[in-house]
Image (cartoon, rainbow, N blue to C red; front, side):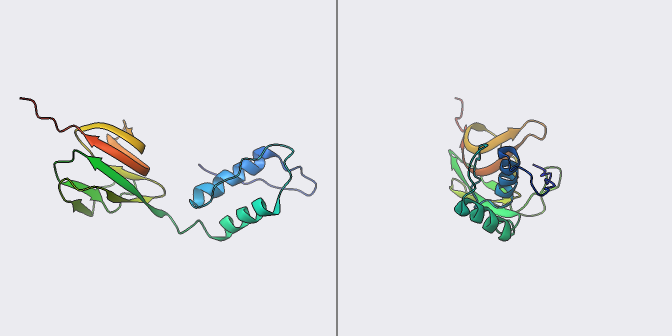
Amino acid sequence: MAYTPNTWESGDVVTASKLNSLEQAVGELNMSYTPNNWTDGDVLSAAKMNALEQAVASGGGGGDFSTATLTTVNQDYELLIPTLIIDPSYELEGSYSATEGSSPHTVILYKGKAYLGLSDVLSTSGAISLDSATGLYVITGDCTVIFDNVIAT
């Protein structure tokens, strides 16, 4: 989300809409911060405002990189997990391979996302979705992939 800063003037009324917009922006920059959900008429508490100030002061909570845990079920082939793909249109420059059948896997997220090309997926759960435009799975947090490895006889 692109944040459009408010231009405050002396005497402005602090509305829930303006404050929640700021809270969400800080929450997206600092994954360890849980944004407050303000309603009009709330009294600004020192604890909530100081938590917001500290989240801003921390500079985004460690940068653009974080990790997620990918749990795989019925994985019977070597799974290549990229060390970093910033955009799905980029070529995979480096990857490591997980051993056959191993789980869980640590996936590096850049700005909250990782892109994986997976085949024979039966189902997924958690923070993973299929991007129909690229055909890649987008991981945004801990998730599970169940592979369909049933061999027809």
